Each structure stands twice: as structure tokens, then as C-alpha cells.
Length: 387
Image (cartoon, rainbow, N blue to C red; front, side, top):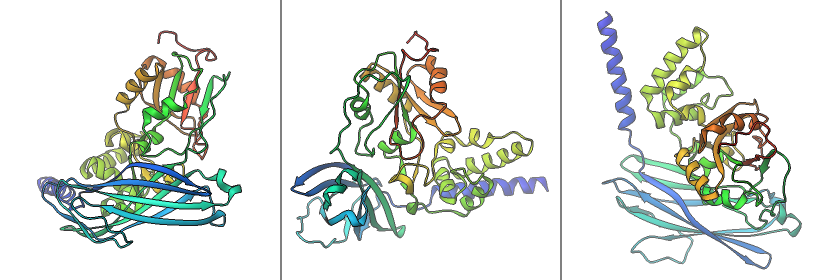
């Protein structure tokens, strides 16, 4: 009897893994490459370029349609005078057609194509200062051996029209730093260099939130793109409603990253430990992303409809940023409950200082747009001078 159960368990394990590993998905990846802004009287024009790559060795995939829905964050419809969108494909070895019709295109294996997106709009003058950024919501088709489905991607075209003013000396020990709405077209190192106050000291600590860093790295997913499995629907029911894994899409995201077997085993063992009053075992077993995934509504708009993953290579980022700026750098995850998690820092001797300084969550978790926080040496009594 026990042998039969063991064999059935092993077979189930392999079937789940095989089903997940061999699921057919589209190999196309869309990434924004660059953008520029033009001013023409009262009108503004953004021209963005996106690259679509086919990373599969053999598969050819067709793109039957490509639509863009631009959204001006901070501006209501009543404040918008006009808006016009043009999509211009720049396919290799094909002539550019001067019309608005998207011809179905075959993207061959290991090849890329480009699409230019032009957005021209005019806003009532009293409202122009309220304009935060332009969000491009992209809806495009993928057609191939896997069947057909609609993909959803989105990214920010930042508004640099109102650059931050140079800060004067701030005598507070903890200084939140406001930025524009960050996006995948922003370089994290350049952002730190642009926004750090001019009067910082080499012994200060500059922290950046894990979600803003992940967003700049392109580590976010539109929830409409996630294909939910029955396993994800089942497992998500075992989590507290406020957890990012309490929804089927949040759980499926973790499964896609970690694999179904690891998540299932972690879920079972975590449930057993929880029965005996030991909490948090699932997160220890399921991997770092289990703690770092932010479900929709967990991030500042316009990313509130995206699932944001944890950032990559945080240790390398902290070392590079510290060497570039000659200041201590840390990537942190802070919430309103006073919990401070340090993902990486170039100087582990400052761990306790960072935790104490950020316990009150000075950056906030709403729409403060302060992803950076500078912890100053001269006003921190418990500072260690061995940096």
C-alpha cells in the first residue's frame, strides 16, 4: 500500500514537472529601446522605439496585430484637448508602409524587428504641470504552433519637463528623495547619480526600494498575460488575503519562476509547520521571489496593474553604484508595518543603521514618488565610522 502511494506520488511529481516544462508558450519578447520628445507649440510628441525578439531556435511566430493605448498619467479626459497615435513597423528587409494598417508579420527564429510608436497630444495649459508621465499600454497578437493568444505589455515614457531642483543642505538624518515616475527606459545607476543631493558625504547611505529597481530592470508582468493553472488556483487559497500569493496570478508567477514541484512541496511543508505554530517556512523553502513578488495594487501607478518581481543582481548593483558615486548603497524592501529587509548592500557593517533609519518607512508605500532615501552620517548618532 505504501509502495503504491509512493509510486503514485513520484509519477504525479514527474507529470506536473513535465507538463510545466513542456508547455508551449510564445518565445517573443518585447522591450522598449529608446524614446525622444518633441515640442511643437502647445503640442507634445513622444516617439518611442520597441524591439520584438524571437528567442526560439526553430519556431516562427506571426504577429497579426499590434495596438497601443496611450494613457497620460495625472491628466483627466476633460483636461486633454487632443491625442493622436501612429504605429510604424520597421521590419527588416521590408519597405516602410505609409498607412495605419498593420500587416501580419512573420518573425523568424533568432530574429528581431522594431516598431516605432508616435504619440502627439495637447493638454490645456493650466493642467500641463499635472502631467506625470505617458504610459503605453500595448496589446499585440502572437500566433504560432502554440495556437493564438493576446499579449499585453506596458512601459512608461518619463516626463522630464520639470527636473528636480538642486537640493540645499538638509539637516534631517533621513531624507526621502523625490523622482519622476521611473520606468524600464531609465538606467538605475544614472538615476542615482542624477537625484542624489549635491551635498552628500562619502559616508552617507543611499537606499533604493526593491520595486523601483525591479521596474527599471523591466521585471514586471501585466496580469492579463499570465495563464493560470489549476495548481495555482488551489495553492493560493492557503495564504492570507493580504499576501501577494493569495491570488491565482500571483501564485502562478511564482510557479513560473521557481517551478511547480518546489512550490507544492514548500506549500505542504509550510502547512505542516504552520499547524505546529511555526510560520514563514513556505517563504524560506520557496525561494527569494516568494517574498519579493508584489501583486497588482502593490506598486505606484501606472504599475498598479502589474505584478512586480524582485530585482536581479542586487549585490552587483550596490557595488557598482557605490564605486560610481563614492557613497554607501543599499537595496531595501520596507513596508508600513516597520519591517525592513535589506536585499543587498556594499557594506554589511551598516545593516543595523539602515534598519533603524527606515523603520518608520520615510519613503512611504503610496504615491509619494520617493524611491530613494539618503541616510546622513552627521545626524545619525549610532553611525559606525568604519566605512
